[in-house]
Image (cartoon, helix red, strand yellow):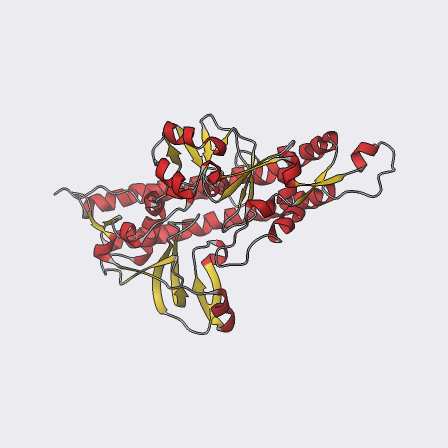
Length: 423
């Protein structure tokens, strides 16, 4: 693996930058709001049909981060040049990209253009990547960073010479960090393929159960609907969604209980601003409370995304846009829902619309395999060990990836630290 110690080069560069800043800006640097040094705008709606009927060579960027945020390609473009974009809605709200060339953006993507000559667009990119996610509004399970908030972010403006030196180093620094992450990701993908292979094998009812050691109970799998074997609960079981909004207040600072969202589960609570509720809201949301180890499945947007809720030392309640499932063996059925069998079953009930979703009634009709309790425990134990190596941020490769990202952020932030100019 690439020598990790070279990432620490920022600690050697920082003293030189500090001396330069002190020499050029002895009283600190100027700070301005983003809307004072750039123009902010939004994209427009692009339907799947439009993308299909107008296919071409120019990318359309959206709110996703996969594939560099590219949603599709069309035969026209709205922008040509160097710009920044940011994700305004959803799990990746606040993510900032550098864009160059001819492209378009959707309505859940913001554009930063006409950057003042006192500010390097590349320096601005790194600064916003450092701070933008702090401004994301996390309420109601749908994170947002709208233009009216984005434009209030304050930007330090050191001399352009200093900005260029920082950008030069961070470009090299980022490339090295990306190389390290790519190596880890390749190894992780190999292990995930192993996990998926064994998961499919173990969750397939076998017809060759006559070999020595196979019991009749282990081989005879029943099939029952989800509603027959377990409890299914969604967020609004206490009343209408309007009632929930009226009775629940959200806090970005620690409070009585943690509101668990799909965003948090996706990031393993690593990179998202946590949202809390008070004791009154927690007592109101009796059917949405979590103890840990429950299966949680997204039923809007990222339909079928499946998680096993962690056990945390704080009261927890489930946010909107998710379904809570409690089965006789949550670990066994968690792996089943994550498998191609579970995902295929969910895909069959997803409504084909602009916002993919499925309802609890159809979900309860999904057929599940029901091996013996002993067999469920055996399979769950094997697959849990695989999952730790491929998905747990406190173990294996995911832990090393998280450590590499924190290392990168530490040294990036070390370089992007400025005193405010004294007035």
